[in-house]
Image (cartoon, rainbow, N blue to C red; front, side):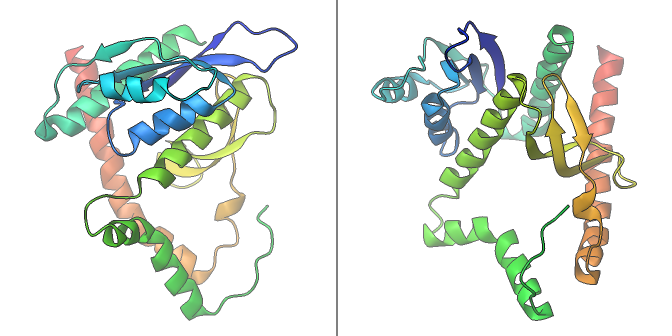
Length: 235
């Protein structure tokens, strides 16, 4: 997804043009609807390897200010090439962006068993939705909502709001890993602050869980870096 500012007068909320890459799917279609409903957005451009005509037609019946002006088909993708293609797409998008745009509150106390049960429930919440749907779908609406929330937070930051925080997986110095997911303070053109407080004062259970995930995350990071380095050599 990408966003560029559109003209706006001082008496109205700023408006943005948003591009949704890969617009067809159980998550992406409700995401497109939520984006179209945002008062920040004046135009929504849809891109996908599949025919997006039905999505565009469906959205045209939603009476919101945002327009869906075009239909764009992307080259076909195979599942076997999913990682390489997605990584390449992200790299190209980041290159375009780079070229064009220069304390936790106290919680009610929980027992160790309650903490463990709650953690497992949160981690498997998506699986629960799949089971409720009899294996015929997944947590599309909540995932679409989460993406929309991040988009709107990004637009608030682009508009100059100095107090916008969201969770994001970014290059980080909060742990020994080169990339990590944490709360960040969003600026107009960059991430202004990595928020360290959530990693301070971890319980023994939380610290053990953090240490257990690090090897898997490290391997994933190394895989991504190797791909990026390979692309740089062949470019």
